Length: 194
Image (cartoon, rainbow, N blue to C red; front, side, top):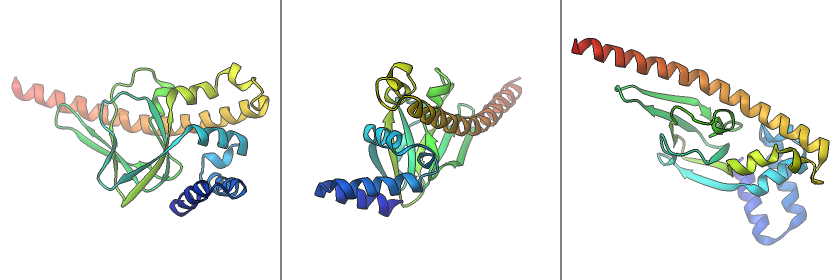
């Protein structure tokens, strides 16, 4: 995927539209979420995104930072780290690889209890960053019916949100486990003081 993205950037800089669309089709085909969408829906989303490159050890976002963006992991490995108030530290390495997203929790839960830090665990990581507001607008009925694909676009948005929901639910199970560990640590700390 890294090679395909690099080739896309080179073609864009050269202004070759036909080659650009071919590279976009390759990107879409190789990404587990985007391959489920029509090319037009993928292109619309891709055009709203920024490509974010992260080096090993760098943070994509910090714990408890406001959630304003959703990230589609394109290549590399990102790890979620949670540092609790009661010396609970947890890592989830199963969330930040090709086909996964980060930040999607805001789409399903308005006030997350906490947000973990996302750290690049491989040599390099790359993600497509899209503003949450832009992603939410895709699902807006008025947006779907403004001549931007109608029913086909609506179906693509449903598929996208279904995929994001599955990813969110998988991470939420981990968050529940971390919250239980946090509660146990707090209980143990209170017991030690009495």
